[in-house]
Image (cartoon, rainbow, N blue to C red; front, side, top):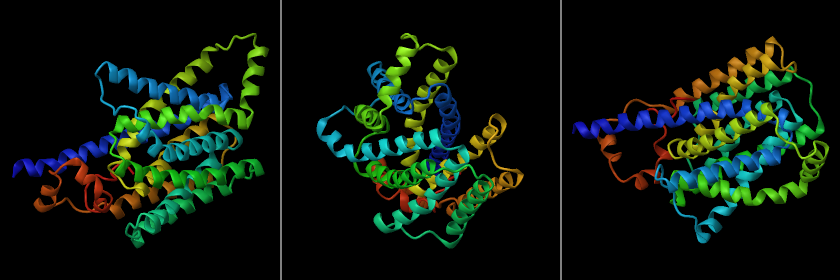
Length: 345
């Protein structure tokens, strides 16, 4: 009986560690990517370097026995390809949004995703409707972010076009990738390998479509083939490293929290990004906008409280001692019952 009671505690700390890891990587990666794009203004090439670092890192670490990943098979790749396309489009629109807009614009559209993800979860994945308190917390997050961005008038048609494209793709990605995690049967590192390798294969197509390859070749000619710049090299290297880390923590966190909770975690993570944005850039909101950010953060805390219940009794604990694959099938429905599912939101 003591072993059964210990299992939920282990799951609590494991879940918390994964979500905290994702939160830290997400917060720092946004800052690092913003800095990297400033010093290395080729978002398509930058993300491709992240993809190859993640895919190669998983393969090398697997060869040396530091981790285990599922082998790359064409039949599984074909099944995973639609999710990889959605993932690539989400990253593609995200980087171009950051390229053409400020962090404030990115935050307000990022904050809209929990509402759309919750709606998509209910309609397409037939999950229970959010409670009144949960829905209110999502509205607080949205209202705080809107109030923040309302103090900044630096909007352009190009930026808004990328923003709306990002909103559509990130909402689809959040729900569809969650479905793939639950049903494809790959382990965490297997998902990282498939996702990044397939995304890397798609990168040249978008280089041609966007014309970024012309900018790259022009820069090579202008610099006489010398691309090495210490600051840019450091920024790109850190971006690739955190890209690998967030791949692991992102997929692992998806397995233990709902799509909506995963999305809200990402929204609250942007609080740190905004703090740094205020310190290093001159284009940001006023003091009123910063107050609105507190409402966004408080909405995340309220959401945590709305989905976190009391510790499970023995009967609930005994259900957690079964096979992990069985738990995955009903994990979303247990989110409002299991402690620690949203501890880092």
